[in-house]
Image 1 (cartoon, rainbow, N blue to C red):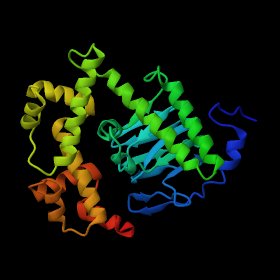
Image 2 (cartoon, rainbow, N blue to C red):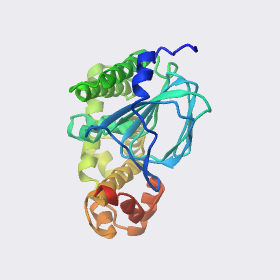
Image 3 (cartoon, rainbow, N blue to C red):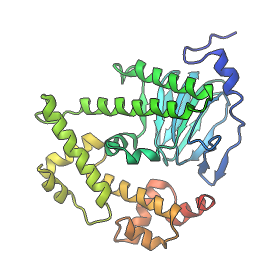
Image 4 (tube, one colour):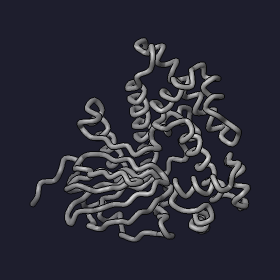
Length: 309
């Protein structure tokens, strides 16, 4: 019998194999994630040698191989994930999956929409809007702790008692806080050798992101936000990219498209009104950016989500 990796044990194999039927609910490239018992999270053990073409879903997906590698491509960026490495796939990101003929992995799926109600959300999501690849090499100080958190999530989930979801999400929130604090510590901010000064910079950029998230539909410009923050345009651009992973214009467009997604799936506004309410003054620019970021037109996106309205 082959040796079972440390992240897996025989008891888990027995239970998780009962958790997945192999069925997928697809509308074109949109996958409607099947959560169980009105839950908003799902963890399952996948040893199926099946590849999945480009698709997306509203849930955040996290993959941890336990036997053999797993291949994932997210918006043309390829990842070769080895056993006990961790890949975060942001919600609503187009991705494809390439499985070896033999192998196994745990897949974690979370509805993280509730995070938007928590303080610090803007800083966390500026980090989790990009694929996050965690290995021993690129997160040496945190890797073991992060893997243990996922182990705890898995154990709580398969106990399947009345408070399993609460405990799994409590571990997920702890994970977000650890990653957020680590991100802040890695920032090379000017004059930030003093803890208080770094905290001041982080608080300023958090407030900037929150301001953009509230006023994205207005006529915001790089010059305006840089001036309000007290930085030169050059320094603001450099620090904003370092903090969020986006340029200012890319983040503003990302936030506007995110709002458009919400309006397209929750309201019956005409496409032109969706564009205006999301902050776009040009319908052609809106259509171009939407297709660039989501892989389909706004009307196609709406039709794919009709079953959810």
